Length: 363
Image (cartoon, rainbow, N blue to C red; front, side):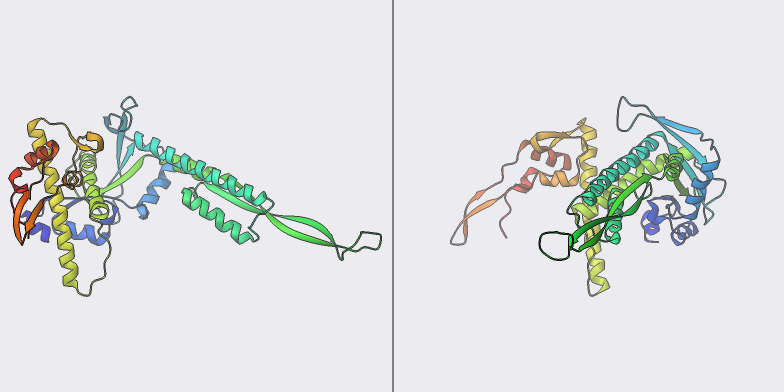
């Protein structure tokens, strides 16, 4: 409701990740004549139904666009296809499935990398179990370690392991002394464990058939699948960028405050900080385009930066200092900061006069 009042109308488009995709959120936006494009979570039933359907039905993916490879300039072009789901999502909204040849390759590489990483760690664990000083005496301990290896590698879905007990027998004299015909021997049995594993081929083949696909949910019926895809791909990175700024740059963390008003005040300051960062970036990049500047030497060793962020822009001024020489409470001499060429250039792009870094008296 607040956004509606700020914008002046409800007909703007929400672009968000899967956190928006709940029944209450989508129904509320739709009931207020708003529009949205969001990702269908993997936990939704519609996701699993479609992936199961692809296992037995060869889908006809109509191509909607071809784009240069986003990683390798000399690599094959990315082919993007789209398939309208004949069945809407659980809330009755439009569901579109997309297939990217680049994402398919990336999914396959990520899966193989996870399997290789887990395989190597399991081989190390198997070597420890076969060693003379193995500290794993219980089957539960071996299973816990194997589960940890698969979980950390992200390969629990594609590898299956078994733990085989092995009994080793050793014979010891019941008492000290030289062994003879009357010496009694005692057999000691120690259980060791052997770890064996293998790929789950059925699951790997299942996932190979769904590599490269991703779903979007929207209530815009007038836009083509390509238009929906372009909107999401162009706007979603901006949202994620602000999330990164909120968490990593501004270090916003959960806080316990005694009253709601204090929490609202804190969040308002965070919102102001986000807005200031966004405005600084927009102003600098806008002026760069107007003046035909492709980059600024903002990185260490004066390396070029094509898309200056507010963090890098503010760091340029982090070493500025102003000194005052006082005698009996009076200013005897002022030492103004000396601006570097890049600092002057950034101030010019921001429309800030250099005089602002000169004469103000100390507080």
